[in-house]
Image 1: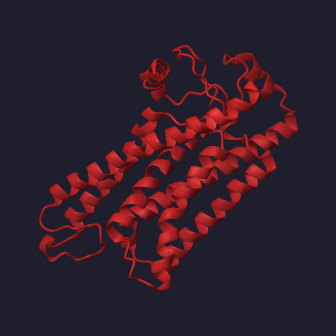
Image 2: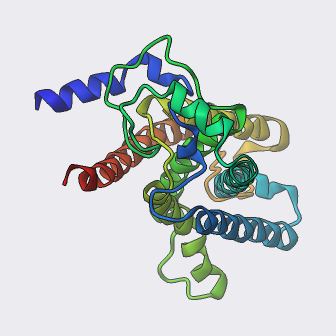
Amino acid sequence: MEGCCGALCRELDIRNLALKYRDPRAFTESSALPLPIFILYRATFTCIFVAALTFVGLKHPEYSIILHFSYWSLGLTALYFLVGTLASLWHSTCTKCCGRGSYGALLNKSDTSCALEPWEDDESEPEDNEPNMLSWQHEVLWVLHTISIDSSLVLVVAYFSMWYDPDVNTVSGLLDIPHHAFPFILLVVDVFVSGIPVRILHVIYGNVFGAAYVVFCLVYIITEVPDMRSDPRTYPSLMFSDRPVIYTAWLSIFILGGFFVSQCLFYLFYKIRVSLAIKPNKL
């Protein structure tokens, strides 16, 4: 119990809010897959998500689809896999050209984590003077990963609690289930496949995204809905009524609270992955 409390206190250290990590290879390599297969994995799901967004855009050309939180989440997930694919491709190209020359030497020179693998956790106390080994693309990828995992669980909960209708047997209705659930399932798998760490305090980045969505909805309600009592049903979750402030407060609690729960859940998955990565080395 004492060890768990100590680990939790270290995790909640304010210094973990920064986008700093000891090894950028955790963002471009996988502990489970060879690099070429890992690149193919990321590229495949990039194409799937981009194709899904393109299909939705062509089928529903009206601008009101930007109110759908599911498309915000889907778009960020697609962007995460796209940036991840490009980062892994760049890493692979540099490794082939330089043979881990200066890149590998820099990692070995600055590594202070007792020869841990990139995807293994460093339980030591975070230091203010710890060198930041991440470049801007790794930091962007980390933020996109955080927003994607946070929004995916909220999307699943919102869909099955408010919109799911078991009596709908149409093709469109049946496709709604994988449309809302697949990103969450894939990102759970991705936590175990990729080496990206999960930090509880990084939920603040997801909250910024959630706040942007809430503000966008509020501005839309105020500026685009001429009669709030008419309930135009532009989108089922936007129950305008005549109380946009109450609606905004409800939406804020649902999204921001859901993001925190999601971040904690994926942090648990991350710690399980870390323990699985460490066990073989202890045998």
